[in-house]
Amino acid sequence: MGRLEDNVLISIEQVLKHFGYNAIENRNLTKISYDDAQSVLLNRSKLLLGTSPNIRNTRIMVTLDIDSAYDSQLLEDLLKNGMDIARINCAYSKSEEWKIIIDAVRNAESRLYQREQGSERKCLIVMDLAGPKIRIGKMKAESRPLKIAVPKDINGKPLKMVEGYLDCYAKYTEKIHLPRNNTSFIISISNRNEKLTNANIAEKIFFLDFRRRLCSMRILERISENKVRVGIDKTVHLQKGIKLHRKRNRDDISLFDDKNTLNVDNDNKKSGSEEFVIGSIRPRHAEIKVKTGDKLLIYKKNIQGGLINENDTAVISCTMPEILEKAHIGHRALIDDGKISSIVNSVNDEYLELKITFRQTQLVKSNQIRG
Image 1 (cartoon, rainbow, N blue to C red):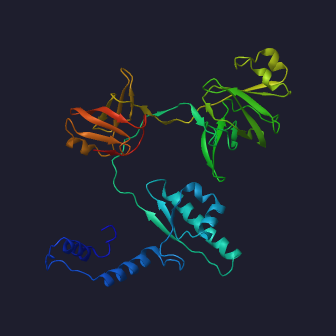
Image 2: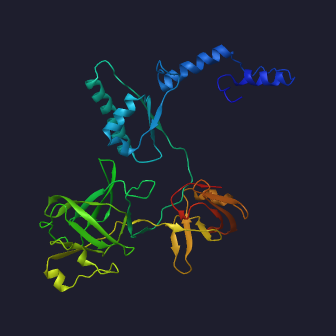
């Protein structure tokens, strides 16, 4: 029964006969033989998925994202090792990024063909269109600490340094994506008149991050008088106003006392310490933390989600408000594919009041709502 897609009626009849039931004659239904069904399925599979390789009967489909497009070696390895179809999930990103992914795949094919004459490797590209979804509406934009995470191994030790830029001309401190397929960042300096001309390669810049932990970044390359490339080797949380300190002598750690508190006085500054201040963090959509028993209001009109200051009640809207008219007291509403479960407590002309009954995750983001 699990493999009857190509001959449903005949397979069901065989099952019925096994239990002693005769086939039901219905002239409105056209039955197809097993052999004909196999032939139709094979032809349609070729049209949709291309011809299967000689060494196997299945095709290998790989879903690619925008980061994959910047990793040329990865794409070549996928093609050489059997990728028949590159899938692009159109529920994410935009047409400009889809085009970048397609071009990257075709360029990888071309490079392989030039290097390995006679072994042309072509793959189809499938654009997977997203269906209708009920999602949480827009959330308020807010500036909050920015976490720059360094990848760790199973023992919790850093795997590699994460690189980014210290830039006096950058408007915001934010994460960016670089062609190296490495999550990166830009740290803006609040004073655009600052100069980084004295920054030395391998020099360390110390600071206390948002959690008041002693952190540092190392200067890797001087790009210009206003911009340097830096690297961090442990996770940091950045916030506007954090002071960065660089020392031109070797006694770097003297900037901090035994309690990891900054200890830069006028004498230290005169002895070679320079201070910079981190600029604004790019505003991001608000995140709402919920737990079992909390109240959550879903408004029928288009509002920006967030917290009501009076009592910290969480409020959101949704992208299909007309569906809320069908909700009644006692109905369940699931958020983020069921990671957050709730029950409709009350209904009025403005909003539904939900009571959180279960949460697998604590954050309400712009994910799908199901009811």
